View 1 (tube, helix red, strand yellow):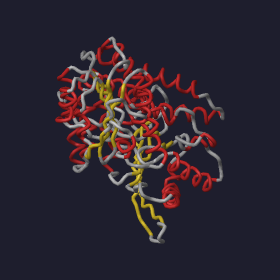
View 2 (cartoon, rainbow, N blue to C red):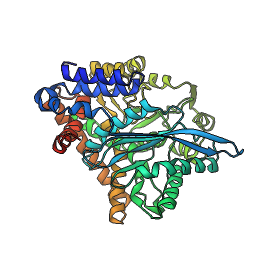
View 3 (cartoon, helix red, strand yellow):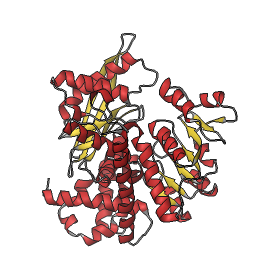
View 4 (tube, rainbow, N blue to C red):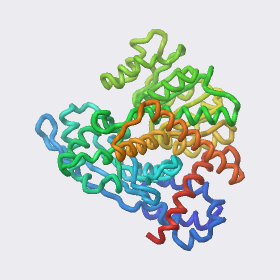
Length: 448
């Protein structure tokens, strides 16, 4: 970092929270992009803007006791990071996964500030969840956990305060149990309190598809404007097999590409003929199975233990849709060596800083997560709008709005990269464009 002010702010973050490596990584990447901006705005330092920007407004930590099917009491840890509400109520998902800790949720909440800003919609940044693992649990156990979790969290959320959503491990089932308990406690059907709800009680059409579809809409616009090409005829490597990966596969295929890989935490499948998505949906959405079942059911496909090898498969476009830091320097070099022209991130921060440097040095297109996967939260905000109006849009209407939002995000971050003198560096463009809107709001609000 060139700015002594930004370096001092980063050093303070590391000193205050020395063990939070994921959070440090996210903060450094953003602050490094803001050198040129801070130089032009000396008033930020006087107002302590950056010190406030990197510190959550509120962090909520609580125990979540629940009873398993054997009658044993289990205790998990629950979190909600209410990071920044300058442009709207806190908005961000609830992650249920054994890896959840304060560092991961702070990094996700920090990224969410900029992601939500880029959508152009009035939503602030937050994130939450628990180290509870829904895998292998019965529906009854998941229900009891969710009811206990929301029994504490309900007092900290509200449609004008904080609107959680789903994330890894938190799907329609979990959101349903949480909403039911919230409704029971407050004795009101406040549909806008959670997003990702079922269609029968206030959910939005296209929300399930939104992150994966949005990823492809932004990637398609990037390919068109920066390389005069498209998904048509391209080979695509995708990691993950959750909602983001499934619907990115669906949309990329609709746009004329051939997706040849998907993965889960155990390993990856390769199908040179193109992934048969109906089989994946049956495995993952039908009975929550493992991706290796695909190779047992589809002749000509193979399954490989371990996840990192997926990036050695040659492709034109790589769409990481699994989890943070899944692509390191070695994997990034494999992607480049395999002839890829573009990487667009469906997961949150899936590339390490070393991997990002490989992309940029190689001159391939790189769309960072805070821009490329913003379609999910954008459609969550559209769900909030429908709840406020007590009205539902058709799938086509929501999808059209999503498409327009993602196209606008691309042009906003591309234009910002030009204004910063690094035309085509969409990482810098996303950080700057997202930050300026939040910074302007924070300055307008005074020292709060």
